[in-house]
Length: 180
Image (cartoon, rainbow, N blue to C red):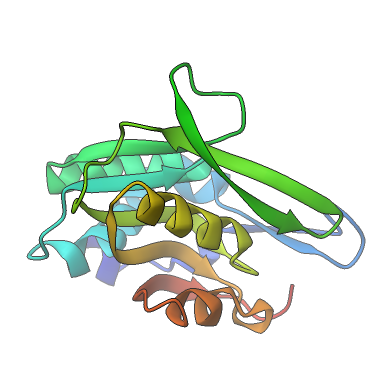
C-alpha cells in the first residue's frame, strides 16, 4: 500500500506565524495536491477501519470534507458533512465550542444520522480538540455512536488527541508534529 512507502510529513507544508505569531500552521494542501501523497493519506485513514462496522463517515469543514469524502468512498459508506453555523440548507442541530477568543458553532442536518448509527469522524488535524469534541457531541446527540476519530496530523503538545481519548473515543493519526 502507498501508505507504507510515502513520507507524509515531507508533503505537509509548515507556514510559520500563521494565523498569528508563534503558530506553525501545518498545511495539507501540498499533501493533497500530490496524487501519491493523497492516496497514501487516504489509505492510512482507511486501513484500520476496513473490517470495522461503520455506517457513516463524518468530516469537519473544510479539509475534513476532502479526506472524509475519500474515506467514505473507499469504505463504501455515506458521508455526513459537519459545517460551520448557517451553511446547511435544512433543519440542523448545533454544538458550540470554545475558541481562543470566543465561541463558534458547528452543525449537522437534524436527520443526518439515525439512532444507533456507527460513525467514523475524519479531519485533517487534531490540535486542542475543541472542534472534534464538538463534532463528537453533535454525533452523539443525533443518536450516533462514535467508532473512532481519525486525523492525518496530531499536534500532541496541544492535547487534543488525549482530550478525545478521554471521551472514550479511539484516536487514529498518521503523523505528529512537535510544537504549535
